[in-house]
Length: 533
Image (cartoon, rainbow, N blue to C red; front, side):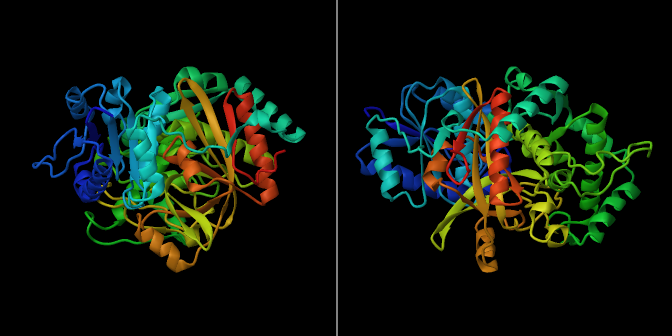
């Protein structure tokens, strides 16, 4: 490497998040730069620390373009992430950059960098941008240092992905083939509507499925506005909202409330969320939506409390009943209305397919996404921390509603508060999946995992390393190591659904793989314990 390497740090759009997270980011950057210099190479930051803003992140697309105008187009570029980041702040520059690109994340659940890096990696994969990637806890381990040395010498890093095999390598059971073919035929014939409340949440370019890739599956977008959702919330009476709250109280769900709306979850915030729940169902019914996604993080965050309570309830079959405006019907009675958190359309398509297939198999159809937050060994097994901001159906939690607690969202991210759906995911067998776009091709990875129950002390410790207000899932992926997963997974999100047993989960995986394939999606089976030959 003849040229000086340039380091950039992409961040959040929200000033409070960037300020809070800067100390962790700065510490990681120092370790990465020291490692680069230890191999005799030069490195410098591509943009300064901003004294007025009190952080050194790229915090908008506008600023990102300014930064890239001053970066030599062929310079080796290292994107270091210890935080969540908005990929569109830098995607433009990465798209035209001619030099090698390396993304680096810290292996920590704190803010977290690896979630941000996975999103950026997936966005670059969709855009067809070549890149290499590394991750580390302390940036002094052999995996990181060896990989960094090779990349600095001009090598593109290729990690082990032998756990991922094309669906054509396996023989699917006849029952799965028939169910998948029937499902794909029915979806194309009758079609389905995906309600999208504003696209592109938090810069997640990877979460937008181009219409020309989505339409052949039989699913079409209804582009809805969050302003319409807010307007509909204003028409919902306090009495209607209170009925939703009373229903949840009667189910045994606990709300940890306090008097200060700036830091506490208040009853008014909860009622606002109940109004959003009612409004979302009514708009979905108006437009005939089979799945919906609310962006929230931009726009609604300045008007209403968090949408996560709403999202988790929508994902649950057993949920507070909501009448049509004229009171003549119960909307989506006895059904979940699958919600794709952070308007991740890849999850929306996945959740729609999963919900219908699971119903046809006689399984509980609740499905949700989690962030792949981080993980650690526990008693000889690698146990992932899957953690999302609250949009988990109570059916997934130990104890259901009675085992579910709602706590105030962190003020750093959620200024107007709102409660989560906090709980510990019940032990059992799941099918995990991710639909993603790879340079113009719609693809899906599918695998199997078991959810384990850890001692309370260990769960609390892991919560303390992340966000203790959010629901947690302890997952062990079958036949997929930590580094294999990181090398292959093309999203910060992972979609999960339970099955009654391991055999049932294998049956569901095969049926889902067949359905995806017959919908025109390129399917890869990941790991082991999936029951396929």
